Image (cartoon, rainbow, N blue to C red):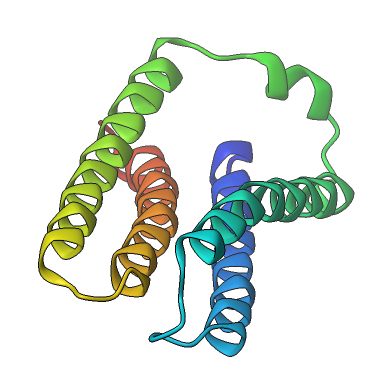
Amino acid sequence: MGYQLKKSYVTMVTTIIGFVIFLLYILRETDVETFTKEDLGKYLLLVVPVLIVIDMIGKFIFNLLDVNKDKDKKRDQMDEFDTIIEYKSVRNFGIAFMLGFFISCLLFLVSTYIFYPFLALFITLHVSGLVLQVSYIKYYEYGV
């Protein structure tokens, strides 16, 4: 298994763990009827540092577990194939995020509570991150 595949698997697992932990925190701490704009702002400001910390922990664990003789050489090499995979994966991420963002905007119009659009946007952020990692895995395993 290549370096990029291992990195994608570890990132995907840490994203899922972070999503579950933060979602449980949000669902435990909030009530649908009393969810205000201030709560929305608080959770939106919290989600970025939480994602960054979880990503750093995942990268740290990955670097500890990645035992390879040519570790430094392979990490910096990126050819045209890697660039194409990067572009296509980011495209898939963007499409997934745009669809979820529009669904969240529609929920803002339809829903009487602000909690449901926030939850849709939060889930969209994490699902699009998973789409990014699954795209990396698919393109590295099966080709472009």
